[in-house]
Image 1 (cartoon, helix red, strand yellow):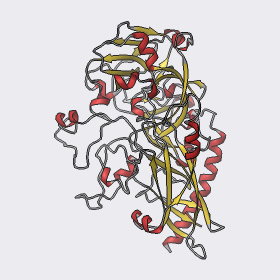
Image 2: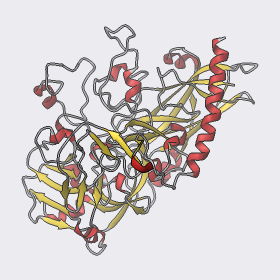
Image 3: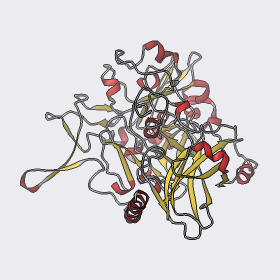
Image 4: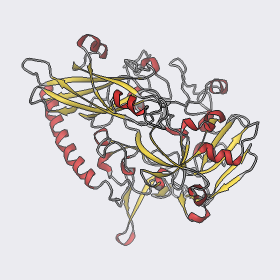
Length: 516
């Protein structure tokens, strides 16, 4: 009776998801009065207050170059909507998003919605990744970007300066941004060798599903052009980008630094890497939650290297001391485990010996049929699909880091609970890619094309036949994998790449499906 019960539950979920999808698409551009994850609290005289709870982090607002990061601390330990980073509201509403952390706001679109708007992701469906409250631009005329450190001529640039095309050429780059913790929850439930009873090993960090990303056309100016005007001093080795937000990791260390990340100077100055200072998103000014008025964008690298609410660019002669370069966004092998006796989780020598992550790895996602909760292997949730003619369509996205194009995606259908390695015996189906390998190759021949650079995702689809005859309804496991142009592929499971920070999970995607 269990399979019938599961299929009935899956059908109910599918119906509800259809209703939610229609409502969310209709509301895509209409702001809602309540942000996802915050609650309405009754107040005096029939009023209501939108609040979310967070512990005290700091005691004073940070005002930098016209940007204000609100005070997080209130007497009762609660903060209002704007102060905790949940404002402005999510334009697409709760139906299209999975809340991973309310304050500061961290949320991702559900997989079934990721491609709903087409190739580029509108702001309302873009990943919401924050390390602190969202700074607000109090006075646009007061905003300045400060270029300082190991430069010959320090600069203070307004938005008008950056938009002056007689001074800096305006450029556009289509690029995907993805959090390094994408699919972290799945990694934490992987059945890897462990002393624990169920074989899984916990990971640390925001519990992201498989859609902590977004693909957009960014408009702005080249970082290399701005640094060339400032004049790079001979001793400069790193370029540090600092935002106006207040982050607890820095305040707890008695630092007044905002969220910051850095690039080697050679990488930053190479115009072919397309590092840019962006003030537009899909042809419109950046929204506050995505970095207004200015952010840097580092195509092909993990999202943490693209800093929102940019106020300082500092050229350094030594490596950046930012917490997010020294104590986060690093990849450790499976045998490196946190030590409770260490204040920072690991000995300082271990942290210092590990370089900061830069390039993304090759990944993919299945958007149709879609996981109800953005998790795949080990989640226990079922996607539903109808195969009335004996087959069904599978769709998704794929991408790789460093400007590498994904040249192949393969899909396999297994009986439920069979190990993914069985796909090598059952057989893989090649998916159709857009752009196709032929289109990608042809684009490289166009005048002015950059050789081999591809920073956005590709979409893919394939028709999968249900085993038969006759086609057999029931529970199956849908598996997908990808290979990029450099031959980088995805491991069968996350066990070989398991790490306690739960980053860079790019195992084969495995999705339980109920076929009707």
